[in-house]
Image (cartoon, rainbow, N blue to C red):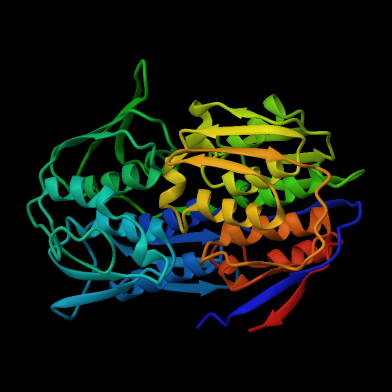
Length: 450
């Protein structure tokens, strides 16, 4: 069980000049172990992120009969091919923890696997919308119970006769797209996904890498993805690079700490993952460079990120970049709150369907410290105040949202506010070692056991 604790921050961080390494990419870690489970042979995965989300995914796959062992820094996944899950009960119970990616991607695989599977998560996960994958997966031929229920817990009854479909994905969600691609692996015929809003393409890249019969065609607006199912996939070796979404918190801390520099090595620089860096550089006057760019295994682009403290500007965030910055919005909101001027963000309704309602969560915290905001269902306006002075203790409740918790930790270190962030253990879902890394560059964070 994840022991609960809070953290207390009372002092500004001093200037620093450091080289650091961020933990492995969570999106790629989850896809690596899930896809390995469908391959024939033993896949070897190095530097896997050992966060709670990933470990819960591993345990879920073990529940489904997949042998996974760790040997030093390598995870060995013993795959038996497509539709090879083994279950002993009429209904198999699968715990996904806080991971929406695990819940939605496994739903794709289970939709074409005969049997009944009961999916449930933690308190936060059980509130999140699953209708976005339920509706398209039902068209393939599976069933979800109870009918009309759109959140976990849910029972999936997989079909033995899946039908290839033409899907339209207009939410800009990589999880929906990936769920459909995983379902199509065991589906005879050609499944197509018309991607109206482009989102992260890790699944497509990974599937190409392991020789799935997948094609991606660029359209005037979006992509047309097609996958021919029932092709055997074979085991692979893979080494994970660092997570750019986790790096975002350290980038923000460096930019807004005077006379500071930071080098973050071996980061995933896939073009669909560096919207945060792009917007900071091109719209907010940030001093950031990506160096030593190269392709890992001929596919994912990796590089080193060099950051210097900068005098940032407020922003009117373009809608077209929203899908490529979706996980970094909480820390971008914090940056905007202590940057002079009014920052505007629109087309961000997807944030209301994450681990928490991230627009609401950030607004509630900013209200406590006297930062004015205005919001609608899919927009927020933040009236930045770089001279904010906070003379009272602030309590933040992140509602099981790791990115909200880390964003407020960075805020406390930047302004020197006395801020207590409750249930900080939620950070371990994506960024184990966050506190020790902050301490390594000079930040003071006190742990308070609940």
